Length: 186
Image (cartoon, rainbow, N blue to C red; front, side):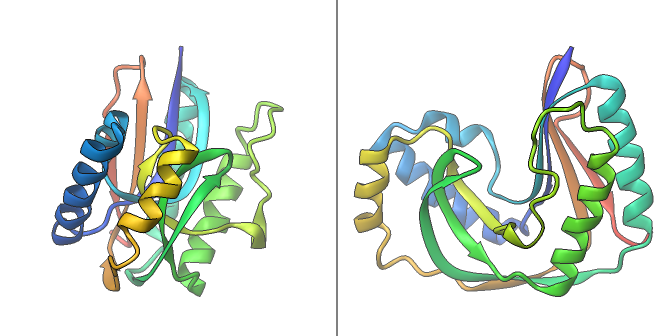
């Protein structure tokens, strides 16, 4: 059995609450019901589908990696963008591509590269990586995306927060936690 996984950073509760309210409004207007199933998050890397053994190995290596990292500040720049990231349509907020975030991303790519099963999962995206905070993902059509631009044109987000943990999110049939939080530098 396989499980879809994402290495992510979850924003602090006040920002999650604010973004959840925005997501609910978009849901009611554009019927993006699937968007409510995944918390607003900053994607470090989507792993795609992996089997239980690879998931456990990635989890263990991510824990080892987290031990070596220190807390850092993440900045949401407030620019919105629409369209597709890795062919997934959605509404996203730009995240400042700071050196600690880039280093974390590259370290996660090194871990994931060990478990590449031959499929192209863009493990070598390097400088093309576009850090983003996902708000509505995978459940909005192009027409609704265009309409949401007008609805959101006056919405501004500018937010900085300390990152002290990363999260391995997964869903599927492996009977493992959906959100596994890993503290940095513990």
